[in-house]
Image (tube, rainbow, N blue to C red; front, side):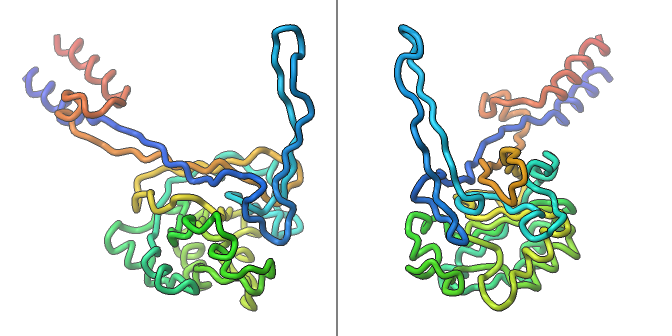
Length: 282
């Protein structure tokens, strides 16, 4: 009986290996900015010996809100919406799914992700859970160092921009039928800048959903099974801010893998439970 209990506990024990995926571009003076906003600028204020033998360097930086890997918050499209400093921390963290549209976008830079693409994803991976972050990978971050390739034009005219986006129907479906709280893309926007009027921004932001834009390396994400973190500095009154977006991907392994040293991070709770069982069983 004792052996059976111990074996059952061993069978239930899992090990978890976590890895990080950095989803943010460096934010520097050559980053892509939206709406003709000022680029990042850093100015040295002091460099040298603050005291004998104590080297110190300090500076000041400035940047437009909407550019680089950044978050749009409700105040961006709603007069009474929350500004960046008012966003609860829990709104910026969510279990994530990745919908891969890189193949379609590689064949058509004007690609609009349809609702059917979401349904196809769900037929393989299951229903998208409520309050998820949905990240759409268009394979676009590879073009980030070229404004022309990334935006589809040499000119800083938003009505000439041409890059893959979500269709209005797909955005509506994710909001209305799947109740997601974050939508993110590796392009400049989930909306196209045209006569459609930015329908995803108009629907999501006034209703306290968040938008992430210009993400990096989204193609490295698995279809599901990761936790997205995208928390901005609490800039007072801001309508958007750069984020250090990243994903924590957790892979479970069986006990045999753990015993072989293939996994380094073990479920602490499971180990405590197992230790307690040995004491209890004598």
